[in-house]
Amino acid sequence: MTAKLIVHLRAYRAQAKLTQAELADLVGVSRKTINTIENGVFTPSTTLALTLADELGCSVHDLFELPE
Amino acid sequence: MSANPISRARLFGSAAIVVTTIAALVAAFLSVGPSGLVWAGIIGTVAFGYAALSVVLHLRYPDAADAAWDEQNTAAHRDSLIFGFWAVLWVFIAFLALSLTDLMDPAIAFYWLGPVLGAVPPAHYVVSVMRGRAE
Image (cartoon, rainbow over all chains, first blue to last red; front, side, top):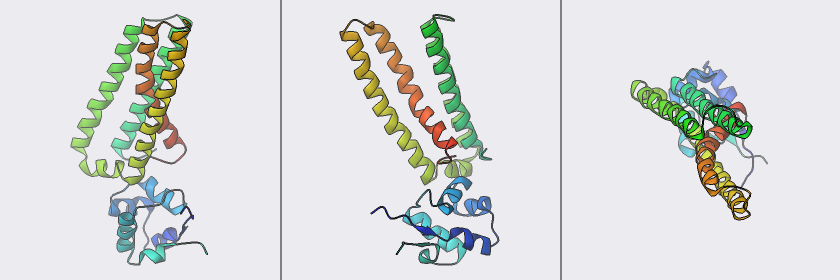
């Protein structure tokens, strides 16, 4: 199972008016990790995905989706 | 460049270990500079200096430490150690072949395995940072 995720994190972060660094501080990761998740380079763990969704007030399915 | 003090120290510490090891290899290859024992001392001092600095920074900035060792950086670090393992294994096999064919002194081969073991994982990590896969 190596399907690349479609990531909507950038849009939800912008909607929340947060910079990558601010979101990184909120969820306790580095800014680079947020950056690579947004660019689809790094796939976060379930825990981090849930934490991101929690901080942005949405569901994990809003942030990430599988390609058709 | 990361604003996280621990990430910065890790990058500079890793780069310093790689640079001193490459300098030692070049000096040995060209037969210039101090002896291998002195180079071992220099590399060891750099490595222990980085380790000591890292401990101090982890104690001083615990929140930054959590971010510096988040899941992506932990994965990059683990990949570096795996790459280092395979690098040492292949270098060991190469040195073994050279030693068995009398092309290399076994004592020299044993000596140079140390720097390879120490420098390859940080080199891999520095490359990961440069590729934007770690911080």
